[in-house]
Image (cartoon, rainbow, N blue to C red; front, side, top):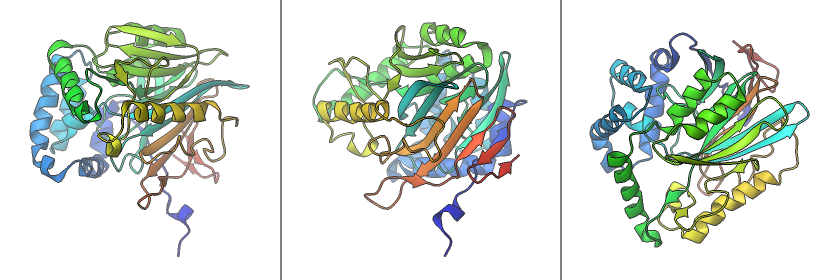
Length: 369
């Protein structure tokens, strides 16, 4: 019987410096379809026939927003020919934990991406992209046009965390009412840029940490978001908490899914299965313990096997873990998926390291072009 390590797969690197996410989706259409099937499989079966309608709603909103990469989504949706592309590109619901810290070789950024959908860890890829400011490596999936986690060697690295939920009520059973009210506000009143589009714009156009920080602080966003940003020089690291037209920047760079200073009008994010059962206090505790555990981790980057990805940072929804150092041009990625019921997720990919020349290596020394 094969050992668990023998069935781990390498994370693909796709060179789409010419063509970007559209080329990525076209060249990896079967992987895009497989991801779509797994991701939509998390939703109630009764909602699946509504996917084309959800696509139309997402397309209508994105088209009227200031999203700069709508043509990419339109081209991908037309070329792939199956529903779900618009909807999944508009699913800004990623919960995460992130830490930025100075090491001897420069600032490092470590982050997990947590989301109840299956397939995100199994199908994660690294897209080698470029814009006017230079090249960058985007931890992404075929068919997705935004940026949630990326590294621009010699410039900066950044990640998105989902911001807390704006609450008008306090009872847990009324949480769906607040979710709906926020969606209505976004639909009718906000025509700003989606946060993942803004982060991609930063990687394509900003030549330095300072310019990326100013862009992420100042450009209006469609929804609240938390950016973690690191540069190449000691001290170049910050946490940018954004509401639609305002920001607060902190030098204390560890984040989960609540503001650094909790606000009674906002509720920390929680995972899908406990959405209705969690109280305000439980949601705040869930975010705080993940943030504190990562802040207290005393190891050093880079790690040998992502030792910092342990409970409570590792949780039932962890799908991707990343370490990066812009000064060294080093990016390390591993994918996770759900294990048996009641158990925490387990790695489903080899730990890969991407050098700034685009090579991919694993801990066993193998090199993948």
